[in-house]
Image (cartoon, rainbow, N blue to C red; front, top):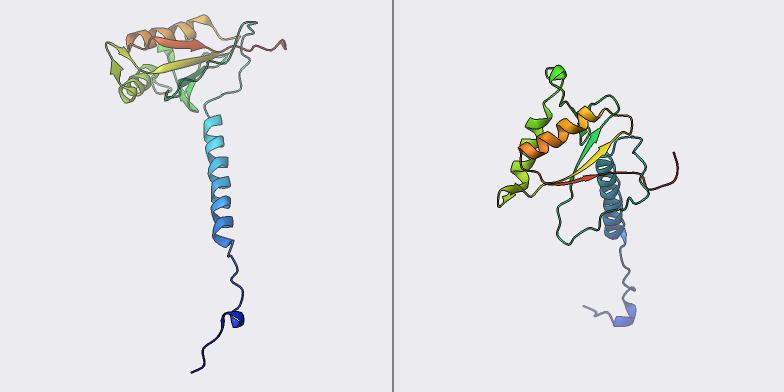
Length: 155
């Protein structure tokens, strides 16, 4: 049997197919993840505030629960339609029940919930709807709340 010499062997080539597959999967993952995060933000005309600013993210902080209050007083959380209006209680799930579940998942420290809430309210929404959301937050021990506003000069 004849032994081959090193010069006779073909030059090894790198197969890039697995790397291309991984990159493609990462692109798909980030496209889907981006679409899911956009479900939290409803199309609202936020009130204008000159001093509004993005909150500084803290290291290891859990993202806040985003609650949207639409112009007609409807409450939406992660795209899910809820109600805080006693007159509409049978038409949609009750907001307070949903908030109780969110608080239980987030846990408690001392007597307050660790859950943080960002409240996005349409500028034409009735204050009664906003007040009911704040009352539900107080009822379940949510003390870390923020109101979203539009810092731009556009109206």
